[in-house]
Image (cartoon, rainbow, N blue to C red; front, side, top):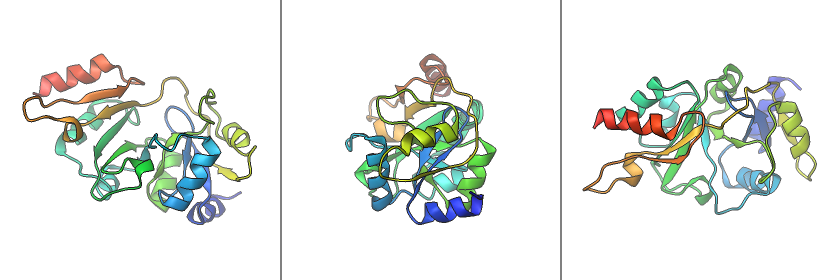
Length: 202
């Protein structure tokens, strides 16, 4: 299937497996109908929001309030290694976080090309909830295609290992007396390295 055909399927509501710098991601346009399908494919708890992949912080700013210090941490750590929870500009679907949203700037060139063409896509791991993810996009899509919904796939072998590190930014977890960030999930970047970076700034 050509990239053009895959893009048309995504725009029509299909889910796609695409490569990232860590593990294959399961993407869909972040609207209610496509999210319904994604959650059924993954057998994911509706109470657990999914992240969104963006091609750059300019694209992220269409969805969320992006403070200047987010640009600094993205610059200071390896490309694609962080997912950051920010305040959303509007009330989003609860499955995207409602008044906050987790955004990841992708680094894989195939993913960048895809997101340039179709806009932001969900960036949750391409596996059934509770199962170990695989590194190959086509293999991940084959596993996810075992149900009633068709999943398309881009070619790509991912590096594997730890997922991106998930950070709640100070704009969503601050209190007036205690400005801070929170490492929600330790991944490619260690909790220690993130918090050391933060302490050097304040």
